[in-house]
Amino acid sequence: MGRISDLSPKIRNIKIKACLQLQYDAGLKPVFKHLAPLLYIPSHGIQKSSIPRMVANTLQKHSRKESKVACAANHYIILDQEVPAEGFIRRSEAANRLGISDKVQLNEFINKNLLTLYQFKRSQYYINEREFELFLENVRGAYQAESHGRTLYEFLRQFRSYKLKLVELVEMILQGKIKPVCPVKNGKLTDATFSNEELLSCRILLIHRRREQKGYTKEQVERLLKVDYTTLLGLERLGILQPKEELYYTSGKRRISYYDPKCIERIQLRYMTINQTCSEYGLSKTVIQKWFQEGALHDGFHGLTKKYIVDRHEIKTLLGL
Image (cartoon, rainbow, N blue to C red; front, side, top):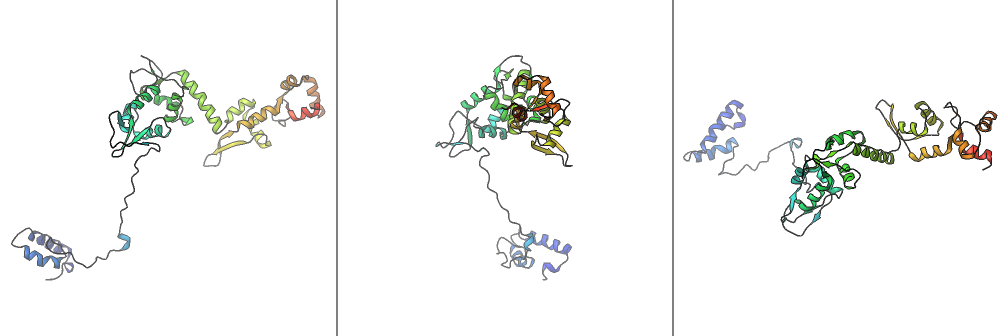
């Protein structure tokens, strides 16, 4: 009997099917044992061929089981108990009580030490229910029936340009900087509402935070120095004002500039208007204007504005201070 590999695919498939049927018949099992080695079909009663199969290295695939991360939260407390007693809840249940979508945001609360996570020896991670209820009571605000205002997610969307996160808003609430109210008795965090006063308070906090992290924007610098955009660019060319951080479009055009608050304070301290100079040094406008005409004083902004700007260093030198 020829090897099955010498047959055409159509005939080979027919013979394989017929041979496989023989092993289920008790009387024909011995016949199947003799035919199986010729057809390279392993049976339960015979050993597999010891000839190794030649497979290209490029086709061999090795499955690697990556180690599973036990917990996405960075901070947790390990307890000596085997399993949790009463008074502990899972993170998924805590997320549902808060009204948030999943436990990813809950892990951010844990990493910020706003909630404590406990691990038991023979079980997974749990949160103390009493601690959680106290946390929920503090963050959702006081109960106030029929209160109107912006919802939690409307509040977050309002400050999307400031990249305000839920965990940052919760920190503000726990610190007493933002005070929401809850129109639902024993409601969730997502039931909280925020008034226009809280909206304004949050905006001021975020402006101060961005100023500390990045600095003033162009619009803020224009208001502080009382100049227009053209004068602002002129001050940059003169080296009087330099941006702390610059963001560009992919085309290379500058999109956003941030300026160091300390640099702005130095400019405000050094450069003054004629009225400010008269008030601070007890001089008259006529005297100061005469000094400009005679060349004893020079415009601090080099003619970028229509008004004379006095350099404090020059006026001190002129007065011998």
